[in-house]
Amino acid sequence: MPVSYIFDHEHSNFRQEKLKQLLQQAKKQAKLEQQENFHITVEEIVDLVLCSRPICRLYNGQPLFGIYLEIYDQVRGELLPTITKQIEQSNQLPQTHQWLYFLQASAFQSVLYDANLKKLALAAQSTPPNSGLRSYALRELVKAIKLSQKLIRIRQQESSSQFEKLIYEEAVTETLAYICTKIELYDSERGNKKFMNWVNFKLEKTLIQCRNQYSNPSTRELYSGSDLENIVHQKNTPNLSELLYQYIEQDSNNMFKSVFIKGNPQANFQQIALARLSGHSWKEIAQELKLSVSSLSSFFQRNCRKFKPLFEKEFKS
Image 1 (cartoon, one colour):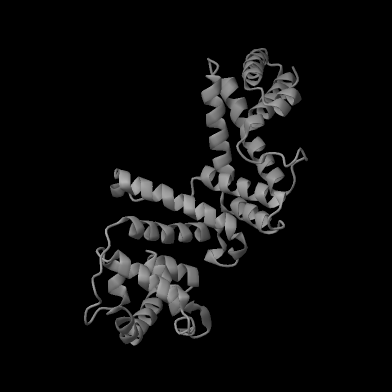
Image 2: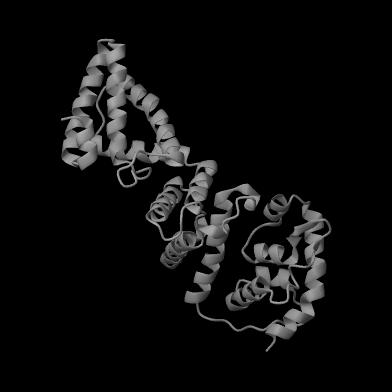
């Protein structure tokens, strides 16, 4: 049975049987040093392995194109030497199902670095809204994000909590839904020009929102002498932190956006405050804005004092 038939109809039983036959054939050719035939057989194995690939699937039966073809070729290039080496050096043939899964996962993960994820995002962004091609591009993007394993994880000390795991799963789902509905908002020039910085910033923000939504509410007031930097580190005031985030993000009078470090409008109080409230470190923000930590922190603290009366008036009630 030809590989093309197995690919078109995705008959997994036939594919598994064919894969076993090809592995046995390649092992025999390697032992007999039939190099030309061996390499041809390995290529057939790789093509067969990629029949069940999780992404870079065909769109409406059309040949692969653009970034989808690029990633497919890169994965194929990863698999060829890997499979060749394993067949030549292994005394026993691997368990086909497990091997197939492992090869797919590791090969795709190795090529789904940020540059390729960014290309997938831009490809989705360039498709017509509400079109079949947009749906295809977004499905590919979401699957690639998951496969890449580049989403931020919950802290190790929280990973044993079933509640935190559920919150994390909810936040990931909401974040991926946001990406699908708001892909036009992605700006490839921001976030240190890295796509996953944009994704993970949104995920961090959503984690805060999910924790606030499902945790017991707290209505602790702003007390005299507090400022935004203190609020960032207060663990018992989730509602207050969220309200502050929303208030600064809305910035109805452009008060916070209009205050920025001289010569750098991107380094405005709104962006810095939102980054701090989302849990970003001074080092991360400084790298993003290409500033020193000291000048950034000084600017932030100075304006915290400036806006303190406004925050107290807004939230003390």
